[in-house]
Length: 376
Ligand code: PMP
Image (cartoon, rainbow, N blue to C red; front, top):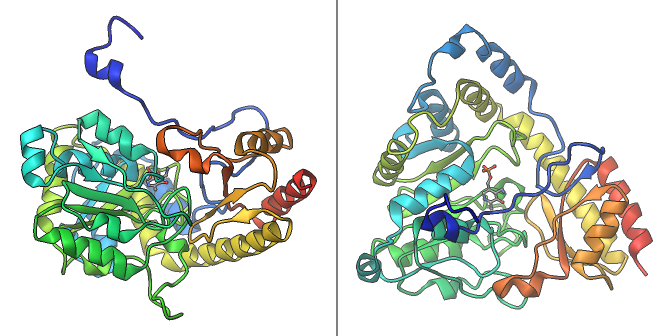
């Protein structure tokens, strides 16, 4: 605490990101980064942008990147917003669409809803902006009970697949939530950070992509948020985007332009546009990660671990005996970083789990060898 902080700053409970070690060469499975490099075309585009043009401000409306996104996902550039990582896009969305003033919140339907076990940045944004929120409980198998979101409220936000569980909610349930809230005009934000790693889930073994980007034209209150940090190997470039109807996108622009008109720099714009156009490369690395994930999960289950069914680039696992905190420390001693979420508030149900990002096959072999030592 400092006497220089205002009341709002004293009240903040900031998000704690996973460790980025500086000294020792750990096998880093703690922040869901991609183990494979960005594509050659992406790196060439960044190198080309690293020139004398850097003396000029970047394009404030990120036109080229929005056009690339629009073309790839079959929407209009006016239906795309780009920001400095999806964390920023989410922060802007909380500010743009969720009420803070109690009377306005009550008129819109009350608190904003997100699951009790989910991306831990959501309560941080809510407290930053002063948005009232409630957290429906995940079911005992850690899946989202979509019916718990079919109730009048001030808005909804959840990741699909969820984090840190990795469990996906079927498309038809996501769309049922969007449909339910359309009438009252409450915005439903689907954070698809990990969607490219999802197995197809149409409930009948068919091959339907999980993303609901294609449904934004049918649901005017649906905002889909994506990131290039995971399946597109660009966590270091900081690019996220949102897709939704033009009114939602204009709302995000109003917030951005009241905060920082140039949040996406020239190198990031060039690299991101090239990466979005280089889908084939990233689809291939994504396939490799999915196959490594499946092999790792099967090996863990064989050793007596619990692994939740993951549709993401990480596994949420429980050691047969050790607590999550103990297991994380043992792995760290073995040179492997994973993420453990402290049991706070309603999340004590996950105290015995750790989240393990999927690395290369070599990384995961080292991880499995360490797990074999820790199994009893
Ligand atoms: N949403 C979820 C569910 C995440 O796990 C993350 C990564 N921490 C983000 C959004 C933010 O990703 P970024 O800011 O790198 O785009």
